[in-house]
Length: 188
Image (cartoon, rainbow, N blue to C red; front, side):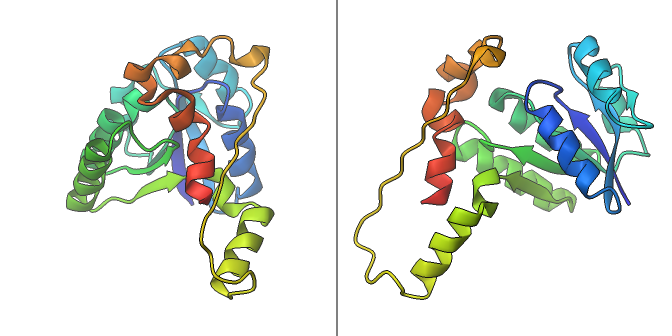
C-alpha cells in the first residue's frame, strides 16, 4: 500500500481523492496539506483516516508518507518535486509538469539522482478517444499522417474565479495554453 500526501487542496484535488478511492487496494491518501489549512481540513474530511499536515516540511519529514500527489499551481512544482525527491518521496505531479523545459529537466534529474519516481499526470492520455486515435495512427488505419490539429474548449465556470494565477504567465508559465491547452498538446 502506497501512503500518499495530497499537497494542494484546491479545486482539482477532489478528482484526485476520487481516483485514489477507486484504487484503495493499492494507494491511499493519508495526509492532506495546503497553505490554506481550511482547504486541507475540508479535503482531509473526505478521506477516512486522513490527517492534516501543518507544513510542507512536516509532510517531507513524515516517515509514513511514501509519495506526494502534487496538485499545486505550476510555479510550485519544481521546488516541491525536488524537495520531495530529496526527502525520498515519490511524486505524482499534475499538469503542466513545470513552466519551462529547463525546470522539467532539473526535476527529472533530481528525481533520478535520488532514486525516486517522478510521474507526470496527464488525464487526456487515458481517454477512450485518445487511445482509439493513437491505435488507429499506430496501425496505419488512417493513412499517412501529414498534419494534425488540436482544439481545446472548456468552460471554466464560477468555481475557477479564485484561480487568477492561471492567467499570470509568471505563475502559470504560459497562460491558458500551458494550463488547459497542455491537454491538446499532450494528445498530439
